[in-house]
Image 1 (cartoon, rainbow, N blue to C red):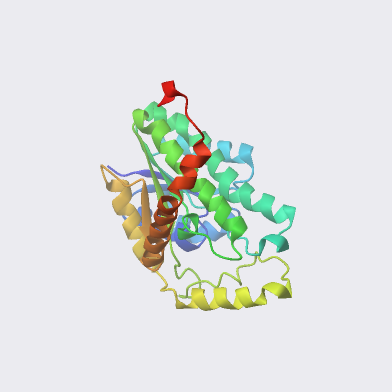
Image 2 (tube, helix red, strand yellow):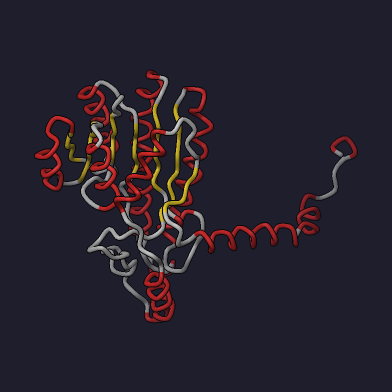
Amino acid sequence: MSKVWFVTGSSRGLGRNFVEAALSRGDKVAATARNTASLDELVAAYGDAVLALELDVTDKAAVFESVKRAKEHFGRLDVIVNNAGYAQIGALEELTEQHLRDQFETNLFGAVWVIQAALPYLREQGSGHVIQMSSAAGLIAMPLGGAYQASRWALEALGETLAHEVADFGVKVTVIEPGGFATRSGKNPDPLDNGHVAEPDPIYDGLRRRLAAFAGKQPAGDPAAAARALLKIVDSDNPPLRVLFGQGFYPMLQQVYADRLKTWADWQDLSREAQGKLDQEDR
């Protein structure tokens, strides 16, 4: 049976590829974007299988109305893809309060509004799958990405919490953690050239050069291949809670997690000391 999708951030990049993959196999999609003109080609190609919705996910009322329209239009919702988001780049002392608030309004609160709007319908159906786009940056932290990484780390916790809360209702949750994908001109996007960069302080120029060099060495994933992989996840009877898309960050993640475990083990004596003396009845 074909599925009905609700996808945010459908105008380009991975979101656009997800929408095209779903439509190409006969599914129906409520595709949202800040400007629906970017969706005209999809509507022309797939007709009534596409519902193009103008949406800024930071507008809570608009999110609830869009989800409601999608449900009423198609009769059900099966796959909710929280894809809308962007990366604010800058060292912590370069970031303004507005940078931080805007980053969380889109990446975190926008995702929460979509989930809250969709869950009543999914619970009523007794089925559904929430796909939360995170990032490899939701698992590790690197210089100049504090705002973006903090928002993604928050989404990681949100997704895990949600999975526990909705399992009894037949609703599944998967957090997807992509590495770099060639979403612009066939190349891995430059994190320092994404339109959301704080005013640079020259003291961090060395970090900027190292970050650019690191990003340039990361293999660029194929967005179309990522979309095909997502179809396998939404069709699975037992999908993963978390899954990496791409292999570029996997060795680094293995080392980071090994280092964390070792550090906790090395400092167990201090951890016990921090616990304090237990009363006899608590032992």
